[in-house]
Image (cartoon, rainbow over the protein chains, first blue to last red):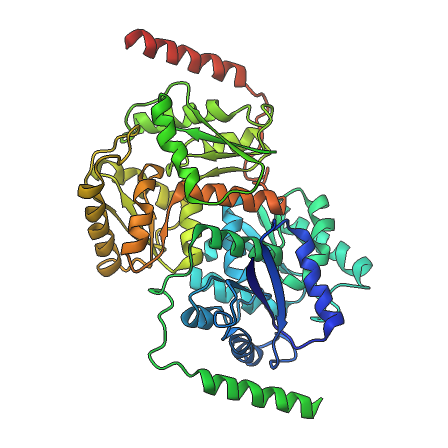
Length: 257
Length: 257
C-alpha cells in the first residue's frame, strides 16, 4: 500500500477537513494507494497578501518535513499557491506535487492556452508567481475573478446558488473573450463547483486537487521524482529549528483564538 | 476492459512491433488494460526531412482516425514528434497523447529546465522546430545528439555496451554545460536505455513512451480530454478518402519492394 500525505494549508477540525477530503471522490485512484490529509498547525488566517504567503510556505514545510521518515511515499499540497513546494522538494526525495505548477503544465497537454478562475482578486499573486517561475505567462489567456470572498473551511457549501452562476459567467468570458481553451479552478477549495461547471462550459476544466492525487500515483509508478539539480538539498538542515518555530506558532494560535 | 491504441509510426513487421511493445513492461498498468500496438499502413522510412515529417503526420492520422469507433478508450502516439496528434484530436473525443509535448511538460513538473537527448545530428532540426512551436525555448536547456544512426525496428538491441555509456556522457554535458535539470529521451525508440540512464545520471530521466500510458491513465481517471475549441472537428470529414489514399500508398510500397 502506497501512502500519500495531503497537506491542508489551514488548521482545521474534522468537520471542515471532510470537505477537503471530499476531493477524493472526483478521481479513481485504483487500489493500492491511500491518502492521509494533514492540516497544518500554524499559518495565516487566509491567503490574501505576501504576509500570508510567507507564513503559508513555512506552515506547509512544518507539516510535511517528516513525511519521508513517517513512511509516506509521496506528498500533495492542497493549495494552488504551491506554498512550501520548493522547500519541501529540497528536503524530501519522495514526489512533492503541488496543484498550481502541475495544473498549468497539464492544461497545455489538453489545449494551447488556459485561463484561471479565481474567487477574488487577492489570489492573482498566487498564479503570477508560478507563471513567472515557469516562464509561461504567454500560455495564460487570462485570470478572472468572481469577486466573492473565499471561505477556506466551509468552501462553497451553502453558496452554490450565488457562486456557481458567477463562475459560469466568468468561465464563458475566459473562453469567448480571452481565448482560453482549457480552464483551471483557481483553488482546490472550489472543487465542489467542478462537476457543475464542466457540464456547462464545453472546454476541459481542471480540478486541481484530484489532479495532484493522480499525478502522485503515476510519479510512483514511473519511479520519478523532482530533480535535485532544481531543488538542491540544504547543506545545513534546520529540522529542529523548524519544529520549534512551528510549535511556538501553534502555541500562539492556541492562546490567542 | 480499457483499450488503448498505441500507434507505431513506421510500417514495421511483427518483430519490430514487439520491440515497441516492450515499453509497456517498464510501468505497472491498471488491471483490465489492453494495449494494442498498431503500425501505420504506409509512411516514411527515415525521419529527418520535412518530406518524412509530412508523410508521418498523415500516416499516423490514418492509423488512428477511427480509434473511437473501433472501441478504444484512448490513443498514444509512439513518437516524440507528436506526428498526427493535432489531426487525430480534431476527429476524436477520446484522449490522444503524443510523447513529445507531453514529456517536455512533464519534465517541467520535475525541474526548471530540460534537455532532449537526440539520436543523431539529422534529428536536431525537428526537435528545435517543435520546441519553438510549443513555445518552450526558455525552458529547454539544449538538444544534443549522441550520434548513432537510428534503427526503427531493432532500436538499440545489441548496441547497449557501445551506445549507453555514450548516451550518458552526452547527457552529462547537457547537465554540466547547458544547465539541464531533467533529461528527456528524444525518442520512444530509446526506451531500452531509460533504466541505465536513470541509474547513472544525477537528474530525473523521462522515458516518453511509458509516460504516455500513465498520462492516459491520469486523463481517463479524471474524465479529461483535449478541448474541442483547440482542435475543432472538420466541417466535412474525409476519413474514407484518407484510408483509400494510404492503402494505395502501401500497395505502391509493396509493388516496389
